[in-house]
Image 1 (tube, rainbow, N blue to C red):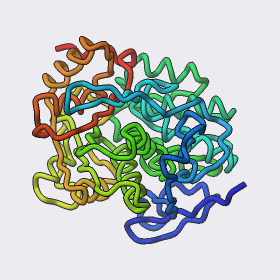
Image 2: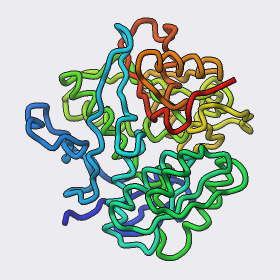
Image 3: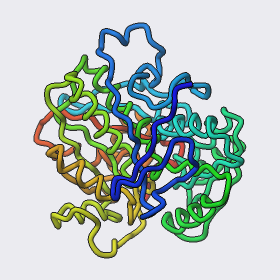
Length: 368
């Protein structure tokens, strides 16, 4: 079996050896990155490979998967002449989080913990529960009160233990991280564990393949904890570094106006979060994160790409969800945020791709 790469802290450089159950930097308690610099394969070598994200084997930190459910390789469809949508709700658990969760389950299987633990507003927890079920690993998922009943039902259906935490998403994360410090626990965090980002980056590798070896002018992604955006930045860097694209797309990050700490920091020209984030109820529950731990990395990635932040109102979310449904695409309310942000021409006609990240059956339609 190929040796696992080490992790390191992007803030202070502290290294965490491969095989450790440590989930954060032991010095600053911040999220970790992976010491891993792959070289993607050219298009010509992908012919005949497995039709899942594992076709990009050269770029993944784990080889020879045993828990795959065929995740990845989702369709790309046109919404209008300049905007296409990648249907990432067409994955085994009906959200893009499967891309990262399969890497976490594979890693946990190799490390052999007594318990896998995750925290989530719903979709990441569902994905971790499903892949742990596939791997035969015991799993507990912490969720905030008010999580969609359908998401709770899906988590429990996969055999995971459910812990509903009083309070918001931040309270849930605090409770999970306290439990994650117990001996023998693998914290399957889609925020802190860098393996998750190396799963989500396959979204962009697929775009590159779908478009015949190029990327659009703009890649638009919803941002709460930033796992899809940071994964996209990783993939763009890999493809550009290997000479497989000659220009990098701009990364546009979308937040709900009701909970927009990163967009606020961006408007202030800051390199990190600014002040205390005001919050209000939002249909986009999956990106309602007041204090994303990777805030500095997210802001830096958007700035380096020449991108920007966009925010959407609750009315825009409702109208975008109804619009997509009228086109045959039933998408959960968080998953329509990117279309809500660009459907009225905010990108000035540049070619763009938006992800439709979760299925509508998870939340139903957003109502006034």
